[in-house]
Image (cartoon, rainbow, N blue to C red):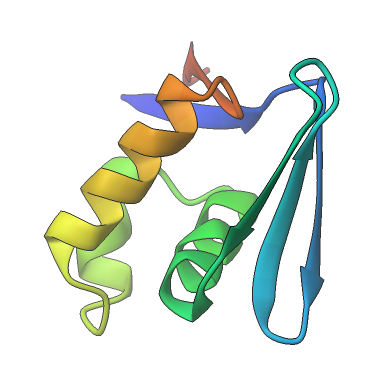
Length: 83
């Protein structure tokens, strides 16, 4: 199984119910809406991304996949083998 870890070059905070991620390496700030903030909280809690569907049926699977893919492409999250 694969889990994702926050890049050491990124910092995040929730502000007004929205996720704010600062990528210090690229000098970029990302502001994500509520649904992505909910997905982020699942990532932060350590839930395997493969199990998101069973934990949060309120979030569409396509939204989860697209958001995680975006975070991986931007190098905000890194994939690692689960130990």
